[in-house]
Image (cartoon, rainbow, N blue to C red; front, top):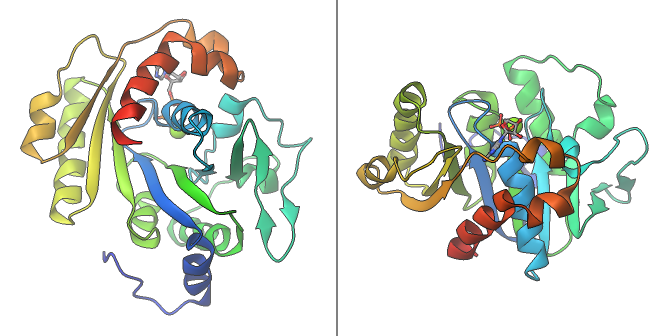
Length: 246
Ligand SMILES: Nc1ncnc2c1ncn2[C@@H]1O[C@H](COP(=O)(O)OP(=O)(O)O)[C@@H](O)[C@H]1O
Ligand SMILES: [Mg+2]
């Protein structure tokens, strides 16, 4: 795996051009599913846009996109525009792009190369405005989406979301190790936790520890209403974290 484009593919050249209007790319990653990446990505992006940054939000969990659910978007009633490429959907002060607009929320099983191809297509076609930050939500694990994310986004910074369970810690350690070895700028967010239990783990892998978010039972009720999520206790915790990196 390389940080540079190794395969000659005009789509990757296109992707570079399309991303040249973006100042900062923040990918939200984890080695586990269900740790809160999607929820964090949506709320973090919304908070950044409320602070006056121009923010894009991209769902790269190609086979299991979920950001539209958190944002409360019905992918059947709204479509990205087309003008020399695809124009992301403007929603609650964000530019939002997801493959769900094309699968129309139908199942989209894909294996390796197809996932990578879908990502290349999305990156080559999506025409972002001039953005301060592009937040990228990813799929769990160290497979297709993770590898493509680390390879195709120039200067990408990685926010690793983790829960403090022992099963999670073992796998997070491998992700942090990989990111360290490859010299990515990285941060750790501890989610659904009642303490700062992952501080030492972050330190061990030279990762900036951004803080811990409690488990808030009301979150479930607010999914689909981004305004409520932003002003909830979850949102206030994300804001404290956001203040450290924005
Ligand atoms: N801090 C939290 N408090 C309560 N529920 C949470 C919290 N973080 C995430 N969740 C819930 O956990 C589930 C998984 O979150 P999700 O963002 O889909 O994880 P991932 O994208 O990592 O798979 C969702 O139902 C989400 O609402
Ligand atoms: Mg997710």
